[in-house]
Length: 152
Image 1 (tube, helix red, strand yellow):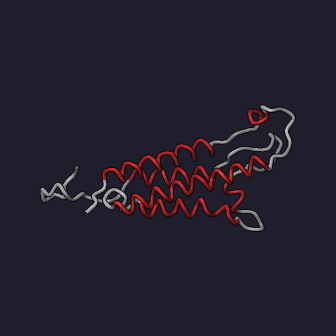
Image 2 (image 1 turned 180 degrees about the vertical axis):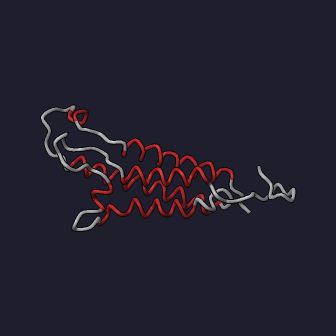
Image 3 (image 1 turned 180 degrees about the horizontal axis):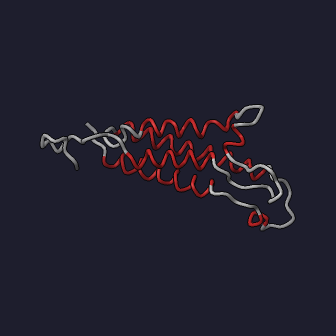
C-alpha cells in the first residue's frame, strides 16, 4: 500500500488505475480495428469502425464503446473507490456481452459456407485478439480493484 507522503498508510496517492485505463483504450482500439474479411477479395473488413461509419448509422453497435467509455472514466477512481471499481466491472462485462453480440452478428452475416471449418479460411486482422486482451484485462483489473479498495 502506498502512502500520501504524510506517513498515513490508509490513504492512497491516487485513485487512477493506469492498467485499467490502458486496457480500456486497448479494448476500444480492438473494437475499431479490423476483425475479419469475408474473403481476401472482399473490400471492407468487419469491425466496429465499419459498423459505426455505415450511412444508416451505427445503431446498437455504439453500446460497446459507451460501456468502454464508462470504464475509462471510472478508471480514474477505481483504485481507491469501491463503487468506481464495481462500476468498471459492470461496464467491462457489459462491453464484453455486447461486443460478443456484434461479432456474432458479423459471423452470421457471412452467409453459407461450403465447409464446417470455413472460419479458418477467413482473413483475420488484429482487432479480435486486441479486443480479447483488452476486455480480459479490464475485467481482471476491476476484480483486483474491488478486492483491494477501501470500503469505509
